[in-house]
Length: 312
Length: 294
Image (cartoon, rainbow over all chains, first blue to last red; front, side, top):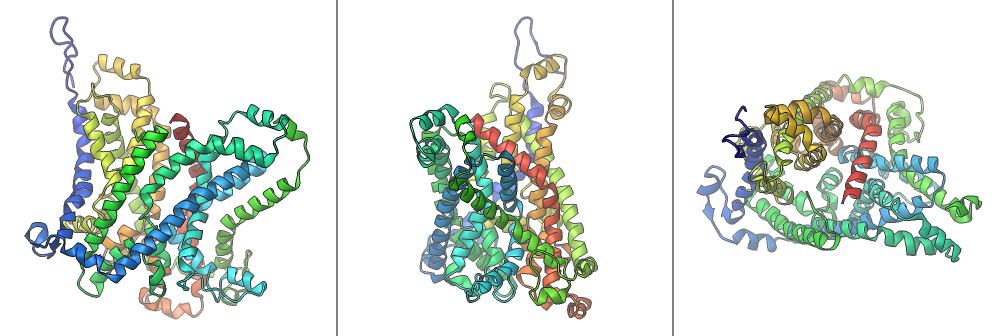
């Protein structure tokens, strides 16, 4: 790189910094193949896909696969389950950390507060493989410690992971439990930005704890709550593959099978026992991606408009 | 809040403190229970005698776990994957973030290139097309199938490029006047100043690679190549005799599945728990910075 900065007498010509382009090549190449390549692969959804004939040799069947999946019971069931689980996860996953932040904010002993914070962040960092292993043991109807405690209180053993009526709620509760502590970080940070004089003034005016919480703290958090709420909109079809794939079983498919787990079973897992139905799995995946993409775009637009949020 | 400091603890304070303490306990007790079970004698564990403290202390399940060839192999596979994967991730993050941190004037086409990467965070081909591409590109059944497809962590690139932008421009300008090229500016000026940020990214990526189980599950044919997370998913999800070697089946009579599972779970979680103090601090700092900046 020893191209001179100033070329001609007086005139400073901007040189092209080729090194910058060179640096971008490896990352761009990987992204092109493994992120854009699969986008191209989505054409399978419009084909009667034949692995040996490849992406462009297979027979095109238009929207046939879409008609097929919309008539498929498994798909409609999974779509309903996905919406149910995801919406409750989003709503409770938004509300619970706010509540806990407000309660933590009322703790005045800083050492105690910090200890609580350190402990509640922990589950966020542990993977679902590990947590599922732990929960399987704890929630077991015969040997689990939770049913042990319930039994002590005179409650019949509950089959938390094997009861289809209960399963979605267990997933929602575990997900909220895993993430709430981490979720408080943002709110607690925003709380430090609230002017303490407001509290003092309200106190002099005779406002009690609850009223100060509702009229000062909560409005102080409003911008960040709106931002989080809008950004989570894109996840309405993300019911949590990692969690459910590690915890579900065929007895709870009725209420626990979600789009992602269905895609996995139809497209990949079935390889081991029968013919994989790549095009059907891809079609379900494409349906999910298209809806999610529209939602994400809408949510970023809203976040940008109302909260002046930018990605970079 | 000088006024409230003088006040004694009200009933609300007491209830609030107890509630939060109980909530915090639910975040830790499951782990304590697993530790206790893993350190107990298998008879006590099978009889449901173990709560939050080991009963008839025994290290048998750990000794047994560490004799299992597949378990040991999976730990080795995970270690190899973390080292290779994080090295690739970090190298690509650095060389991608540096050009993208330039202005459109310094680097023509910068905005278009930035969008080229950022868009992949918003849309993707999904599970099956990605699976097919990985299969077709010859990564099947190799360690690279778990490393190359996610080699450019775009979110980290954005973090690092924002960090690069905060560095004083003068350093770069004077170095360029002195005849340094971009590679030298990056390696000798930017990198030394960014070690804190890069260390954080290394920790994130290490945890991500250690925890990730799904790509191993779908791209690897041989169980001997599974990383620990995939291995654990397999044995915990379907604890059956298919996953065992003959010698194991014979010894399973002595060591209950339960203590063994607990021991393996704990070993799987251990690295993350060990870096947890750092993780926690980095995350809190990183998220707080981001929110205040916006």
